[in-house]
Length: 360
Image 1 (tube, rainbow, N blue to C red):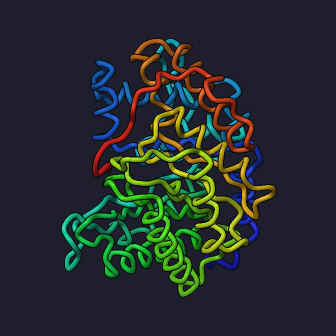
Image 2 (image 1 turned 45 degrees about the horizontal axis):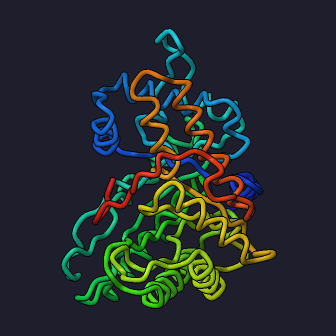
């Protein structure tokens, strides 16, 4: 089917994901990455444990009060749940959708070194066979997709022009391809937080990246009203000597978006990028406090910043404690997406989440 035949559905799905006071749960960790999370809490990385944990997410009571969509790994999309007695249950994708949470799927196939780029630069793979994978995901019940491109600021001059153009074009080709299968594309040009550069440097690079991305999306005929943006919050490098205030982060983030993102995009759903659970909520709330009204819904698409406490309290066996911790951070970020979060008002383990050169 053509993009034209899906336009109304794409716009409707994008608006549902952009619901006020809500955001996305990014539960699309690869098998290897979720293994690292499990190792930290003493849980074996088995298919049964992965299914049990994702069943915890899918059955969390009232999660849809704050979460509009969930990004799944391919295994999860085709996995059945388990009930409280460990017996097979409904497909996980049906559990989410029956609770009013739109299921989505990570469709990129990871990063590879960029030939001709500077050291450490990458490009995102997965265009080959994407049309068929997107159609299969749609048939299974997914209604949106995600593709993560990664750029890095370094003293050596990264990102290079080649890196910016290559990653923008990959995002655009992905977005057009999945729209033709009926999936709303989340466009994610992540700028890593590694480095000691200041916030002005991040803002300049991010403006360049986002302008290039939206130029490529236009060239590929992507339907913007049926797409979403998942950018980094505009922050200095993690090793910057002067930590920024929430007010400064809000100022630069909003300026960057206003200069680059078309108003036809329904929502900007920030990634947490190594911020702690509490930091991710505080910065998001500051951004929403600083603008009234924004032309887009300014929400969240958090993975580690929604699940860190959840994993710790679950620890492989305590479903109720894990769900309680998940709901606390979901409430925090739902409030933050309206500029209403009071710092410290929801529990969090507060552990730092930054990982250099983060991949998953």
